[in-house]
Image 1 (cartoon, rainbow, N blue to C red):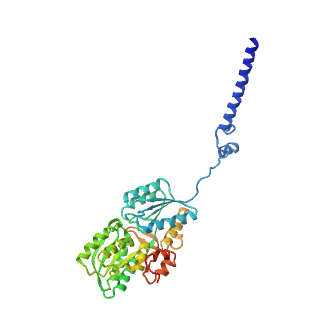
Image 2 (spheres, rainbow, N blue to C red):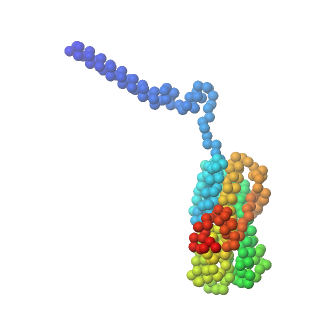
Image 3 (tube, one colour):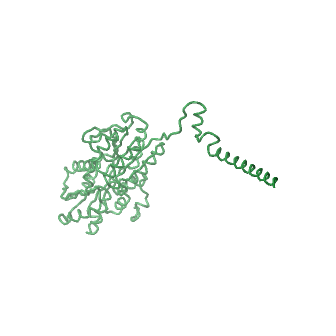
Length: 371
């Protein structure tokens, strides 16, 4: 019995010893071999007695808030902008405002809270963002007013096309296509968009010396193209002999042409738009839309991304090549980069749109002959 008790004690000591070793090994593994849970950087700091900096993200951070992606062209703008910014080593956070001004303000405030280096704004409403843009400036964040000029905001840079020129080439196209003169309609975009005002000024400037007469005009609130249907139907009841229709963009033109087709007028009434949407280019070769104003969206987006990255690195706008213009936003003179639009008709669509790589030939001529 005494031997059995002694043997039992030895077994307990042996098991206890094994368990102790296992426990110690577990502690060593969990604590990183006795460093009290410190990271490698922490240990280096402890060993050297000097502070060791952990790696930080030094990439330029850009916030891009877009009116909405309902309009085809904004998708192209986004893709080209993001691709270029990434090629230049920046990171882009894209937000879709969903055609809501309050949502866009919230997105800009979010970018401010995230301490973005640069905020790029495609404004939903150009007249309601000045206060939140000031908040961005107070936080030391640069702001680019992209394509649409934000009112009274003192943006660091405005980059867009010559919208007055867009209006001029639209008017001249109508004059060229309707040499006999006559009544025309204007179905414009949102009155809250500063570009619409500039396009209108250019349009009126050229039209005043012609024999065309604007007998009906309307604005599609929030760029809602479907509103154009009711406007054109109303206008046709009053002025059935209309000769031409100026449309705020190609999306609006699509609705206008639809109404004209329902009234057996498609191809008989001259329709002008802008943006060179694929459907508009198809209508041009089919003969139901006369012209569209081509704006090289990829060029605009790429240049904007390049400026944004440089601004994010601390480069002064005044020292950047290409920033040779200014534009008044109602209160401030804003540094500006202005690109030139081109009138596209059936005569030059192959050269400008297809050869230029904007749309493929098989897409443009989907429902029409190449010749």
